[in-house]
Amino acid sequence: MAVGLPENLFLTKLDAAASWARSNSLWPMPFATACCGIELMATAASRHDMARFGAEVMRFSPRQCDLLIVAGRVVMKMLPVLQRIWLQMPEPKWCISMGACACTGGVFDTYAVVQGVDGFIRVDLYVPGCPPRPEQLLAALIEMQEKIKRTGTFTGREFAGRTKSNGPPPFDRDEVRRSQEAAGVPGLDIYTPPEIQLGNAGKLN
Amino acid sequence: MLDLDSLHEQFGDDITESIFRDNRRIIVPSDKVYFVLEHLWRECGFDMLVEMTAADYLEYPGATDRFGVMYVLLNTTTGERVIVKTHLNLPDPELPSVFPLWHSADWLEREIFDMFGIKFEGHPDLRRILMPEEFTAFPLRKDYPLKGRGERHNFPVITRADS
Image (cartoon, rainbow over all chains, first blue to last red; front, side, top):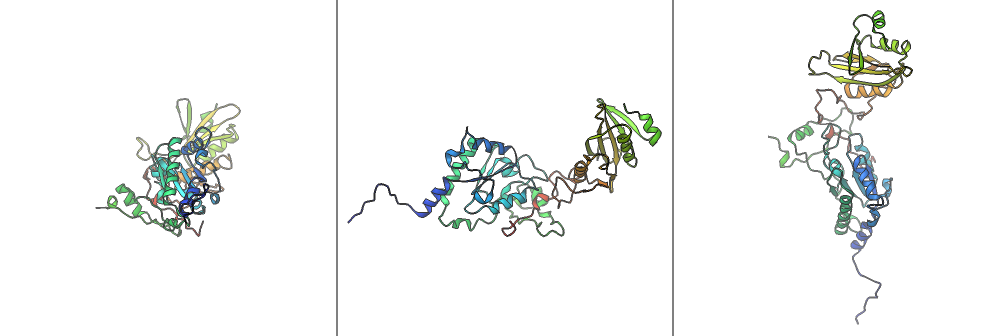
């Protein structure tokens, strides 16, 4: 005997249901260090209204957030703070790197500025622009939601493999040499150079 | 108006003066600079240290000394401004701190120490102010490469246990 479904029921997978709920209620953690932060504020404000996509609850406590938006350049002194905030966010968590500086260091190719936060934390989505317009950030948010719906699982098992940063090795030959020569600061164990996987671009000689 | 002759009488003839776009500069040897500044503060009414900065004259045309340190002083009663300039050389550039005269020198001297490695003797708390404490170089020296010597690859990687 066939049993029909009542009208107010639908069938889905648990993974899809969880991802659907998570993707439509992202709580961003604004890590706004520069002019991209202004665009981020504009995105959240009335004209562009990020609330339309369920991501209006900006929390300044990393324990309550699941989407880190790195907006602006990150300098050496700020990087421990960024790493700590990222680690303090509970899983499931995602990261948007907003703007040229957060993605690559941008025009600030200097001794103090981190050349892309993806060398140190796991970045899901890169937003180009200097700074990106709010529409671009909204597009990134929608893309982020699509990604969560595509890859999310109920138990969050996809996060088990996301322990390392995913940034590319330095492209510039001098940069590669310099990174290899970077010596740890004597007496400070935490200052060990990060392991850098050299692709074809990074081969010396 | 500050009289250069009185400075000559008190501190000797190796104090010179130059004017560029209405900015009056008094160039003082580094061993006398604290006494000249103290004189300006006590006797001439320069009660505000507006700005204090340094410059690296490496490969600068015609320069004979490596570093220049400038004190921009203001007399808040008369509105008169004067720039006191002194020169320093490697190794171990060092000046007496003017923190006892103007407390605004506190962070300014820390910044100069951070960027140029010029030490200020008698400063109450001479630490780096902009760069991280672990940084070892002095980045505004002209012989320091713009992209650094690998410091930006040499960060602490914080683990979950540390956070």
